[in-house]
Length: 361
Image (cartoon, rainbow, N blue to C red; front, side, top):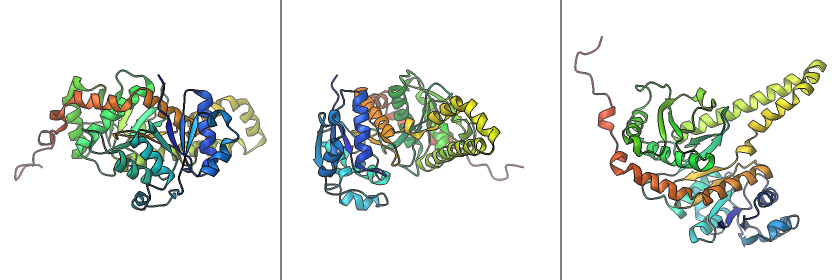
């Protein structure tokens, strides 16, 4: 099946045109059916394409005179959407000129522009940002929300679970992903009212869900590999993800320091180099690059701002797979299967009744 072309915000990221074009070229070499709409400064893109004739033959350039700055407020970026490379890439998805958009630019601006231009799918109140996190298991963990929504109610969390499971089925080919809610404990009584209500709603849905809901999990268990999707609000998810990334960098830096501390350590490094290279590959964020805004009427993928060409190519490959596997349609079908009655909530049944006067110790 021929894939729709992918709109690439060529100006986004820490480096900009060179890395974005090089990443698209690498993705094109790996998958020769990919076609692109490269959005940004036409002169700079043409110059970058000179080194990549294979990509040039499969691409069209859309000139954009402006760029969204990394520190620009989303409200300011929205006002300039029609002149920026990010805004025009998203507009191409809305108009049908492209099937999806990829950007390494300002995350807040990308979220705001995408939500205004594409709107949320029927049955979805808020879009969520989902990413893949490395684990000890056979595949990465799908984690959401990672910052799009700092506060969420039970209904939002249930919707996130449905979208995250659909994403896991696409990227990992799983028939029944294992889904859990991130909490401060695994007991049913732990956590906020919203978490306990979301758990009750998911349990009530039962067989209508296209995944297996396994209750709560704690943050220290996310990397074990026995969970496929973990769901939380954007505030908690963003902190948890950055803590995990920081821990990975700490381990890598500690190993580097240890191996350079003495001649014996350097000799030990040579012996253990195959293992350390495997660890480096597993923890390299470029090998897990490509966060997805789930719940929109269109596919938008966020590449890390500091991603290398390999990381950009990975984000493009993720985007193409979401298109080929029709992720948006899968989410819509799963929402319809669960039904509105379940999504209305069960707050009255899961919140504890107030104690009678004089009750207690």
